[in-house]
Length: 299
Image (tube, rainbow, N blue to C red; front, side):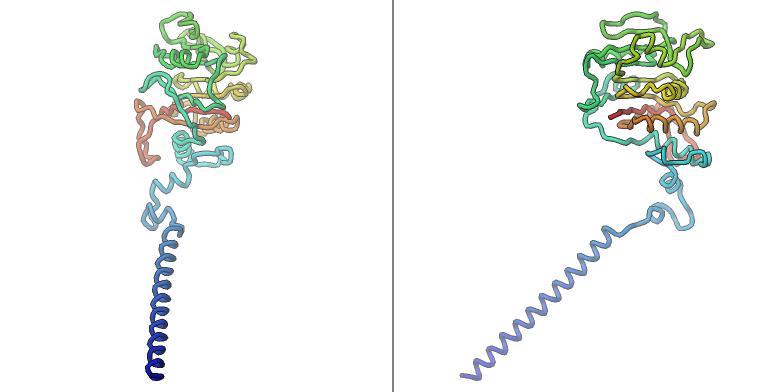
């Protein structure tokens, strides 16, 4: 009887030892697998290994390295090569800085419409003022933002066959254009600086809720003048179609203009590439546009 009890205890101890060993082996295997998975998931994987063969850097690598998408103020643009500046220009114009939680399309779904940020801190509220530079006989943006937000819209375009008039109680058209200086050009168009137009309309101290600008290359000189004369202090939203193929303005000069908008406090919340302005250039790996419709807010 005593022998039977001894044998039974021995079997119990052996069973417990075997079970314990199995549990240890299972735990160890699970730990190894978990650690391996963790390492695979979090281990840094250089972009150049992912995207190019060893010793053969790809265009994608170059864009990632040189194509800055934000914070132009931190770059020494004067020391960049022409190819680097080109990559920065097209990378920067094609990306955003900040999220607008609610965008509302004013105007045509296709060309001619623009996205207004309806977030509470920047949305237009009456008595709001909108400056719309460049109409080209498409009034959909001006009409929509005046009807939906109750803003007074001041529309400017010297090129269309229409004299100065009130289109509605809220939309006021002026056969005038914008430029970096006030003068009459070769087409006999009367052009004004933005500051001079504000004085003309007695808006020197008024907040301009939205400025929309589609003026076929005149934006560069106009924006430079607006920055120099401190015209963006009371502007909440700024919509600009940038034409980047203008040859008499260098890429460096264009980037410095964009940098000045950044320094003035504007952040990009939406970009639309105009498909009518297709561009294929060997300095960039994919087809681009040379007309970027960039939407800014200032919070």
